[in-house]
Length: 281
Ligand SMILES: NC(=O)c1ccc[n+]([C@@H]2O[C@H](COP(=O)([O-])OP(=O)(O)OC[C@H]3O[C@@H](n4cnc5c(N)ncnc54)[C@H](OP(=O)(O)O)[C@@H]3O)[C@@H](O)[C@H]2O)c1
Image 1 (tube, helix red, strand yellow):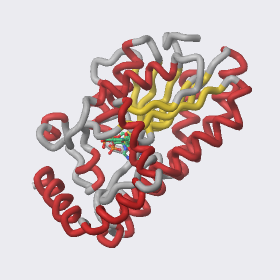
Image 2 (image 1 turned 30 degrees about the vertical axis):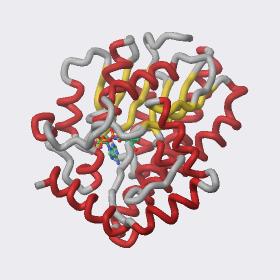
Image 3 (image 1 turned 90 degrees about the vertical axis):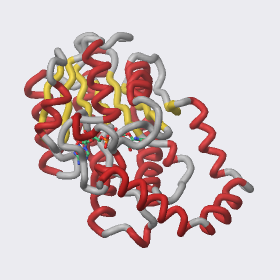
Image 4 (image 1 turned 45 degrees about the vertical axis):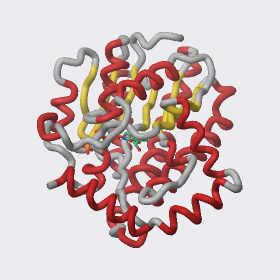
């Protein structure tokens, strides 16, 4: 199956940013998309007028919500052909400045949520792969998974965990027809910075001027759509040159980054505080 028509795809975090662009892209190609987010009003706004897309209010960091979400998709659509694990939270701040609840939220959303939703969806995805010849699981990770740059140390650790999970899962299921992909974007113009601080925009109008700088989310969505129709499992950086982030792991580049960035910790703290203040004031 190399097109998206009639494929049943669950997208987490579909009310804003990259997830929203993914929902629009997949629905335009004829997929039956179920999108989830915690905020129902924003989800309704995101899905208004998108044929083939439905919304479910669900928190992927909650175990009962994860179970209910997968059950609901399968009971409403009869199967699950694709899972796009996009929802994540990033609290920008040095480790010593990060509150405990932000640590818990990042780990439970970005890591536990991704691994456990995959676990719950796997029986359905493997059935779809066997019955229909294809199924896909895709995680939107980050270039931060490849190179850890303050003030995103904790977020980077969760993204590195996602990266490792994708690689291991691929080795469990590839021969059974389930493709496992990851997309590693660099900076994308979305609401992640303010959402991570608990100041998510209440509406599209409210989001204006509060997004972080970066490429358009539609560019990431395009790579998601390409992965879901590709013959092979893919790991793709968007833009492509962000794959160079891997060099951050290579000596002596890693040593150089240790030395330079650790000397800049006060400056990083100031710049982060200003970026947050500019968008939450
Ligand atoms: N923006 C970037 O620069 C960038 C770069 C690399 C990778 N990424 C990755 O791209 C993905 C999407 O990020 P984004 O930048 O588009 O973020 P965003 O603009 O903040 O959107 C996040 C979406 O996820 C939902 N969400 C957050 N927590 C959730 C939860 N616990 N349960 C269900 N839904 C939840 C949000 O809605 P609610 O708040 O209403 O739940 C929203 O729909 C993430 O995995 C992120 O790590 C982003």
